Image 1 (cartoon, rainbow, N blue to C red):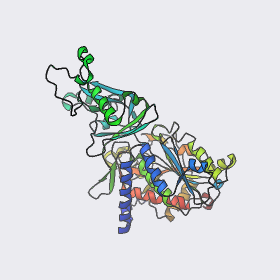
Image 2: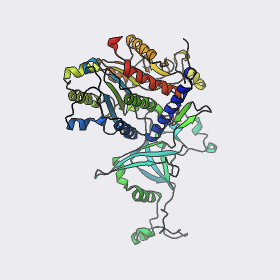
Image 3: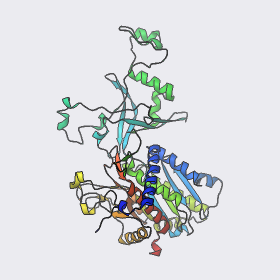
Image 4: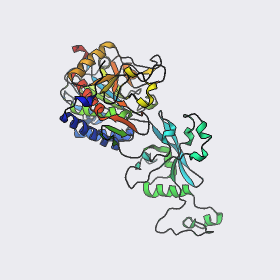
Length: 488
């Protein structure tokens, strides 16, 4: 089969539109390095586009009708958006579903310690990472600290030019003979991924004077500490900074969610600027065009719905993961406001819906070509990707889309002038992976994985083609406008 490159199909106008869309996408990536930040970004944009919060609509007893738009946020980490269509819910919806969590390091609940005159935060990695990729990088700290009073402090350190950054050290090559003999999966262990956050045992301010040799440095802490012989420590100095600058006490870490991510902005990659290099593109490279399609496609017959969910990287578990009932509950509330709810109507709506599980696929990498089966791989620049199935080995854990659905999607994409390709996730017995597709398929709806090819997936910096991003955006809009199995 002939494989086209999207860039070869673009005239100057299409190239400019593609590049402009990528600029907006990079802005989103910089604003949304955590799932909470993504939700905040999407809520702001949704409200600019006339969406109202579902809870408010319920309180006001608003009667929803065709053309109305609502959204619902769950625990500040997941959200669902609806644009009400002309057709009854029971005839099904068109659903896009992407996840907004990404692999990273999380700060533990009792994290702060020092050793050898260096202050650390103890961490626990989240999702599938190659642990060695996180050493010696400039890292940033994002998240929230919730005090027992309920007050919330938002933390974002390491992204501005004058911000400090953090890092995890590595052993110098001169002393690493034993380390280099270890397997790549173990030579950096999870418990060794501790973040260096300081090394100075005193806080320098206007009242601080240099300590001469032999002097006790605990002047500001009173006579009791002088008599005990206790000296300034790095952890005490760091705690003073946390309290003075952020109002955070050590015990506040217990109720904090702090994520460690690569510091720095999304960048153009390549002399031709054809790619985006950034953290967290799995799966925000699908979440952003899904959201944009939800905002922009107004001429719909079937209700459009976009799911942006948490916890996919660890199995879609928990209250904010796709296995939660928050989506089903929100849909029931929306149907009630439309005067169409019953338990049977809800079941029929879900079963008759069509979904694109908007998730990334592994782009063919010539540097590691032996991991791929080339003719069933996706390529940078080849357009959006459809994965009929994922899973591992004998399709274990996969949603396997049926041929009728694929046939209908081919027609939708052709009518929408969308370049697409198909792929599997590497060689048959080499590995595998999963998405949220199988969870929505439990309702009996048609579901398939579709998204954007990614190089260096799950690395601190991932690469995507701007053309594939743009084709996914076009494809998601075509899906909302035209997908209806009853018309096929």
